[in-house]
Image (cartoon, rainbow, N blue to C red; front, side):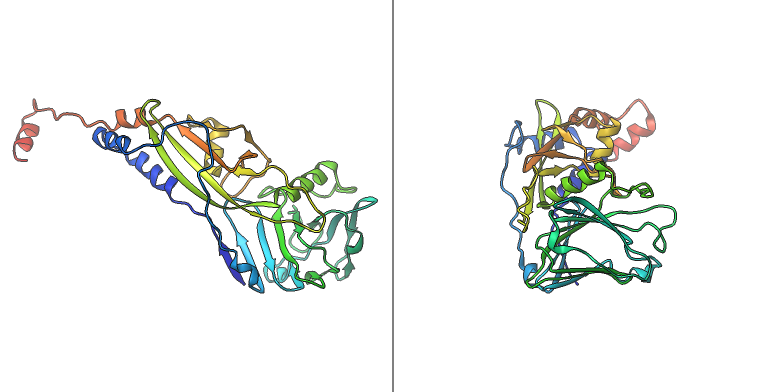
Length: 328
């Protein structure tokens, strides 16, 4: 399996380390004098060029820390999903929900049975699979959303997983746990709750604009004594056979910043209103600024850093200190 990971990180980590270790007054002045870009609202400054050569590979998985989803791409007309789950003691999906012209249809699969999904009547690009009563899913469930770029001509769900066939390459298939790391009780999903349906539709639109890379820069503002981190995003844009209209792009915040923002644990301001899709990752909440290619987060902490790390004159009233100073 080919892998493609294109997320540029590092500037924020370096800056965080610099803030944690402190800086002298001289260092701060030197950095400020080299800072030419001043404040203002977030504006695009150019993104990262992403090489999409993986599209020629038989199978590629595009994974980004900027999204809770992975983008599977195949240049072939057949694809297997949820395969080899038995290697981890888990069963294949036992339930699936999909959209038809008559509404949302839920299908159940008994263990050992094979289920042919009605692909010709699928009215939307998404399907939802969950595992209630499958092996390994006895106390909780983890529903997975699958979003197709191209309509399969056949879909078979059985104990080995989901097998998709098409007369042409299947292209991009987005997959994600619908609720992130939050485990679900799906015993009452008959019929499928409207809140779940709307969540599926919302993410199916959002995944047409997949954040694949971010370029981060920072500036120091002497007038506000703040550090501003500018994040510029690059997107993997796709169209599907259902002509799904993408929702507004969601430029994500770092989950650690999301924790600090929600808990009000650190002073900061964001360049736009923060949207909460109510999805928790292994690093923290998934938050973002909607309808933008960039955002800026400002931390008014330089005054604290410089005052805390200020170099104090030695106390020469102490004979030991005076003797040590004279030997330098």
